[in-house]
Structures are given as C-alpha cells and as structure tokens.
Image (cartoon, rainbow, N blue to C red; front, side):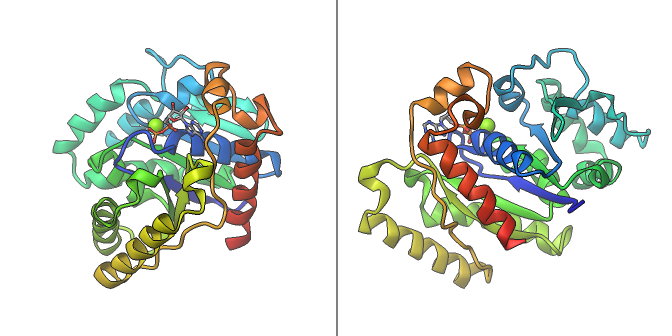
Length: 265
Ligand SMILES: Nc1ncnc2c1ncn2[C@@H]1O[C@H](COP(=O)(O)OP(=O)(O)O)[C@@H](O)[C@H]1O
Ligand SMILES: [Mg+2]
C-alpha cells in the first residue's frame, strides 16, 4: 500500500475539483490501486455524482465528530463503489461540524487524526475540498501528503493562485511540513484556448510569481483535461465519465493524468 493522501483544492467553485477527484480516483482504481474518495464538501456533490444520497446517513461528518470527541473512528460509513474504489460520503451536517470546530483544540488537525485509522487500508486517498479556504480545507491541507490544484483558463491568474499558495505555505510552516504541491491541472480547455500563446504566458507568469513570492515550485501537469458535454452527461448518469464513455477525450485525458501522477511518485 502506498498510503498517499492527496487533497484536490481550489477556493474557486466550478474549476473541476469534484470531476477530477471522481475520475482520477476511478482511473487509479482501474490501474489496480486501492482508492478511497472523501467528499469533504458539505454540498455533497461527489456523493451525488456517484449516485448516493447522504441525507441523515453517516459520512465524513460522523468521522469528524468521532475524531473531535476522541471516540473510535467508525469505518461503517465507507461505501464500496466497487472492489478498488471506496467513498466516504458527505452531507450538509458537515457545515455544522465546521462551525463547532471553532471551539475545538487543534481544530486544523481533526481530519488528520481520523485518517490515521483509515490510511493504512489504501494506496490513494483523494479529498474533494469545498470551494473555500476555511477550516475544512485547512483540515484537508493538514492531513494530506500532496496537493492537486485544478484550474480553468479563466482562473489561471497569479492572484487567485497566490491566495491559495499563501494558505498552503502557512499550513506547511505551522502544521504539515512535508506537504508538497503535485501540480496544477488545467481543466475544461477548449480547442481555441488550448495552445494559445496568451495562456502559456499566464501559466509561466503565475508559476514564476509563486516561485518568487513563496519559494514553492508549482509544476503544471503535462496532461490537460479538455472540455466535453459528456462530462455533464456522465454526472446525470451518476457515473465516472470513464465508465460512462471510455473512449471520450475527457476519459482518455484523466487516464493519462493518472499515469502521469503515478510516474511522479
Ligand atoms: N472536462 C469537462 N468538460 C465539460 N464540463 C466539465 C468538465 N469538467 C467538469 N465539468 C462540469 O463543470 C462543472 C463544475 O465541475 P466540478 O467538478 O463540479 O467543479 P468544482 O468541484 O471545482 O466545483 C460541473 O457541472 C461539471 O460537470
Ligand atoms: Mg465540487
């Protein structure tokens, strides 16, 4: 077992965090890795994308509550999507947990403590973060070994990535010194913007801004995810796009991305 925990983070919504968590996880599980997906967004989009309803059922919110109370972590809430792919669902109660964290000692390390009990069972644990840099996301940053940042062409600004990097840097300094940024994953590219000089320029500028300001290397993954209407269709069918339409360009892109990520390990 590799026991690697990866947080999929970006404080902006709609950049492909949930889609990346689901499809990267699916691709890794197909390649034989044992994968756990954690829905860490109170909206529960990942849970719903896989066809599960999380209302009033145990999930990551119960595991967080157990961890806060220092009770034994109940693994019963882990859903077996298939043999190699498991899910811890989330529901809106996770937002309530985030509020109670205010008064908890070491509030940033609650997820990290909980995952100590779970991490031994998996090669990869992927955490689908909510679109904020609040306490939940910091819990994910504190718990993970590395970070994937999905970005759309519109979000590729030095400012947006700078705010995120500042939070990563603080977490690294204060809580999780070994954290590393696996890289930036460009998502929802269309043919027109795909190879535009303008975009390559922005990418390079952002990377060098982050290097100068934070002394962190920010690699851009070679694999890039194109835009396709099938991505939305797959979600309506409650499936990974790789399962729904394996030959689609998005499916192939996520499979290439999974290989690229494994090669870096
Ligand atoms: N490659 C893609 N092509 C087309 N639509 C996509 C693609 N990836 C994601 N989407 C759609 O974009 C929206 C936002 O994606 P999502 O993964 O939910 O982002 P986030 O989790 O960052 O909010 C969703 O409706 C999703 O179906
Ligand atoms: Mg999401």
